[in-house]
Amino acid sequence: MAVKIAKAKTVPTTGSVQAFLDGVADPVRRADCYTLVELMKKATREEPRMWGSSIVGFGDAHCRGAGGRVSHAAMLAFSPRKKDLSIYLLDGVDAHGPDLDVLCIHACGKGCLYLSTLADVDVKVLARILTNSAKNVKRLFPVQ
Image (cartoon, rainbow, N blue to C red; front, side, top):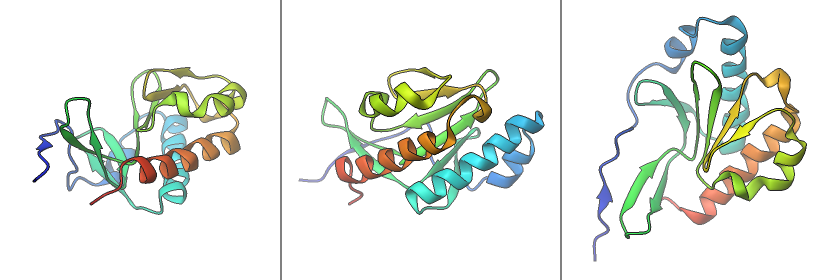
């Protein structure tokens, strides 16, 4: 039986990641974004691409929802929002409790990690969270 993939609102685009990040006005936020690109490239072994107009994503995953529908999403992603850097963890933040306890200053949603600046966190711990999230997503949501 064919799996029905739900039409996502945020999809990969052909937009330039570099142009998007170069457009981030705050130089500290822009530098943090480029650091996140390197951390996520290493964690996923994937190149960045734009998802919609404001999300930088890495890799692909097909996630089965509670209703059985499958959604297409980036394995790891982030967006430089006005207030914080939003880091999207497809495996959810709960999977990273012990690391979050030692990450330093951050906030969490169900699937998002919010950072004001990378200077507020232990970047080695963040790299471990990103690497573990990518591994979890590959295991939980293999691309078919």
